[in-house]
View 1 (cartoon, protein in one colour):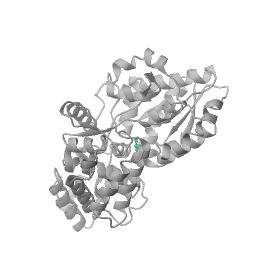
View 2: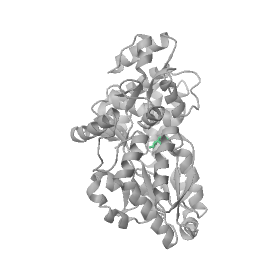
View 3: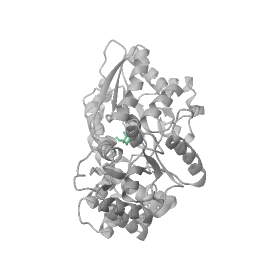
View 4: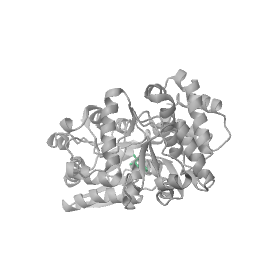
Length: 416
Ligand code: GAL
């Protein structure tokens, strides 16, 4: 109910009033990119806009996964002052489209030949009723395990390639007095770990049936019980101070050798990069156990809101064009840890984790292993996702049994 209740009756005011207008060309951009690597990434867009003579009004709302940002956005739209653009992605773009508050940016898309440079699966998500309303910035892969090889070495553990080896390594790290799994106890992070675990335990077909088709039989299957059992076991390798910890602080624990491993999407790589660390030597990017043939994608995008005045509309189209430019997609993604959403960007400057991501995305799109990240808003409507995330968080923070969790998850999947 989350989205509908808060917006449906109130959006009209926002839509009618339109965004606040000001004279000088300016774009106001809502995002939640506030960690070290993320801030560096978004700063590149600001620079490009300023180079075009357009002022950048930063509307940054801290909080990984973007829940706080979405709350702030709803409040602004209700108040009749939508920003120029906001980081909204996946099926949520359709939800906002239905409210009638998004702008048509077809002219920027036609000029930049977006249809030809984007995979169909991506361009379809950026359109509402056949018209572009959003511009994609990247593709994040979520099913990664970040590892500090020095910690493994100190603990006498080897690089894990499956669940048995993962738990063997975790046990050694723990016994050596270090934290095996760096984690932040926030619902979206809990769901991020769980989605990789479910993919690793059940495989891509299972994942699709459970989280894309929301098939009740799959959601209540013994495989799902096993996924929760595995998550329950991972819980025992997380330190007692994890509650509320931000994801980038968990990544910092891996960077500085306090912890050995973290399940997280490749925005975590942005933190390693910002800290001057090199893949292969200072850190390893491994597919989460059992998921090396699969790829959970999470595409960030900027949805454009209706703004008033020629000047502001022109500035908005410039923003959309810049976002899709090969120059921006290169520099943004080098900092962000992700890979470009569009074709035609050279691989030359990307590191081994990024090129592996590019290759794996390609291979998985051919073998059926390419799946949407449900924890990051790619697979289902926001109300359903919210209800399912709550179940995972409850499991992480209580003694709930795997059987009870499975029943609760299947019920949550019916939320509309
Ligand atoms: C994801 C988002 C990423 C990153 C991460 C942490 O949902 O797609 O761009 O910001 O959350 O906040």
